[in-house]
Image (tube, rainbow, N blue to C red):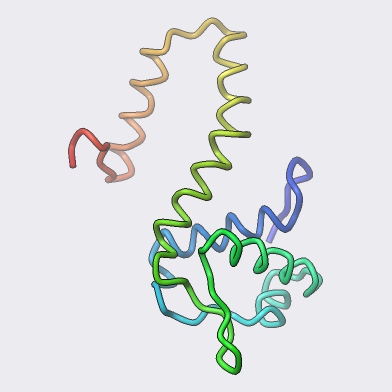
Length: 129
């Protein structure tokens, strides 16, 4: 995995895990890789993965059962959505908004691009659901 210098590694790993959960690669109740397995697969120190797993446990995204290991929590998908949403709202959108403001871009242009992306990616907006 290629890591960015703009964000702590453990948070980038949390994003990766949440992405896997939101893509349903790992479903609620399903076991996820152990700390050691995951550390080896993404080539980081197991302590970094443990820090990520601890954070995700606190957020209610994953759970740990003695003798079984870590798995996606019962409401892990919803918790992952909230966690990622919070991260995006607090960091990524602020940078995007700053650039939009600096360039004096009309919000309609941004909105149009967003809907083009959704159409191309096969997703639906909340209005379409």
